[in-house]
Image (cartoon, rainbow, N blue to C red):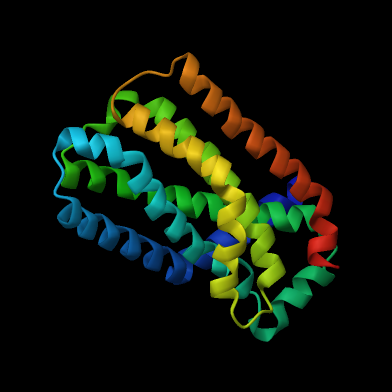
Length: 226
C-alpha cells in the first residue's frame, strides 16, 4: 500500500471514529461558540471595529479549538494498545501521519465553517463578500496547523502533560502562518479583494504549507518509530 492510499485509509478511520463519538468535535464547537459569545460582550465593538479585529479574534478561537482536536489525534489510539497495532501495521509512516493530519484538518475546517456564520450574526458583519478567497485562506492555514500539530501530537502522546506541552510546542512554529492568516482574513472579511500586498502574505501561507508538508513526509518514520 502506498502513502496516498494509507492517508485515505487512516483519515477515513479517524473521521468515522470521531463522527460516532463526536467527543472532540462537540468540545471544539462548544468552546468556539462560548468564546464568540464572550468576546461579543467583552469588546462591544461596532461593525467597523469588529472588521478590524476579525482576523485576530477568529484565528485565536480557531487555534485553541484546533488544540482540542489535535490533542486527541493520537491519544484516542492509546486504549487497548491500538497505537502499537497501528504502528506495527504495514502502513507507511508518512501515510499514518498525513492521514491523521487530513482528518484533523477536515474536523477543524468544519468548526471554522460553523463559527463564521455565528461570528457574522453576533458582530453584524457580512463576511461572505469575498467568501471564495476566504475559504482558500482557511484551507491553507488549517492544513498548516494540522500537519504541524499532528507531528507534535505524535511526539507528545505518551507524556502525562501532553495537553500542556502540545500548544507550547506548536504555537511558536505556527507564528508565520497565523500572522498571514490573520492579516488575510481581516482583509477579506472587510470585503476587500486580494491585491499586491496581500498576495505576498498568501505566498507565505502557501510556502509555509509546502515546506512543512515535505518536512513531515521526510521525518514521519523518525517521529512514529524513533
